[in-house]
Every structure is written in C-alpha cells, then in structure tokens.
Length: 218
Image (tube, rainbow, N blue to C red; front, top):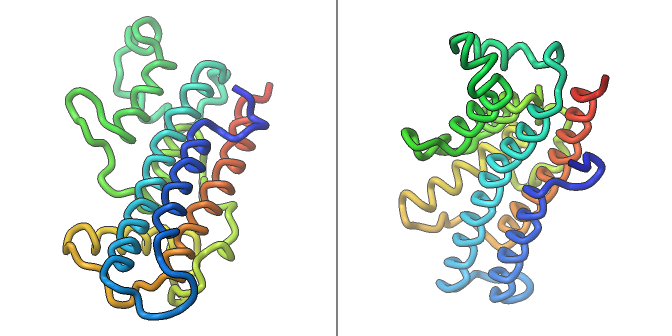
C-alpha cells in the first residue's frame, strides 16, 4: 500500500460527493425560500453526506487493518488489539487463522458485521468512528483534525470535529426517522455539510496514513 497516496476509501468519498453536487445542482441559485422539491433535494443531500461519512469510516478501517496487520511487527501491535485477542485460544492466535487474520476479523465484525452479525455499527457517531479506527490500530484518529472545519451554522458548543460529526448523525436520523425536512435546513447548511464531509475525510485520511507509517516503521 502506498501510504503517500489517498486510500481507496477516500476515492469513494470523492465519487459520492459528486452525487451530492449533482443533487444540489437542481436547486435554484442564490437565496430564497426553497420549494417542496428543493427541500427534498436538501434532505436527500444530507442523508447522502452521512452515508458517505459512514461508508468511508467502515472502508477505511478495513483497508488500514488489512495493510497494517499484514506487515506490523508483533511487538508494535497496539495494546487494545492485544486485549481484543486475549480471549482467543493459543491455536487460533499462533496457527489458524493466526493473530493477523484475527485482527482483521475483529475490525470487520465491528465495522460492517459478519455472517452472524450482519450490520456492524448502526450510526457512525464520532465515538463509533474513533472506536473502529482504534481497532484498526489508529489511536485518537479525530484528535489531530482542526475544529475550524466544522460548519459555522452549528452552535458554538458543537463547533468541534466530534460535535459536528454527531450533529450530522442527528440531523440524518431526524430526516430518516420522521420522513420530514427540518424547517431550519437551508441550502447554505447543506453546502456546509457537504464541505465538512469533504474536509473531515481529507484530514482523517492523511492523519491515518501518517500514523500507519509510524506503526510500521522498524
């Protein structure tokens, strides 16, 4: 894996954001009260922005652990991973399937589920994203991202990376579970969410690749 280049997970983000841009391209330019069709576009765009974020974290975790587990030196395996695998038998850890494959299995089950647990994490709040990436070997993955990328329309207390992620999850849930578009949702807010997802995934991708490089260093 080329740690100097964006991950495959990030490339899917770029494709997804093009869909959001296409959706928003049907909304009228400038200000003004949105009509019913535009409000539907706003709702769909927010839900899609969240979907991009959730899928990115899931796929990033799997992509990183698949690369790191293959090459990391045993003595550099993070303590959290050792704890996760401590309940496995000596045979599983040392022979079949081996601790490297077991590590990948743990991340896969947590992020996307497996044959017995099909769904993994239901909502990718900041804590859930941190947990998935920590299992993949990346500690405090969101900690190095500047809070300034958070949408300006959020309350001051929510203008942190973690607060913004959770606010997006909440907004998406409100739209999906009520079938309604919040009255306060305007075009500028949707654009801000689109830009936030772009910024947070860009920063997170770089941060994770730097930390993986350090983890794999001799």
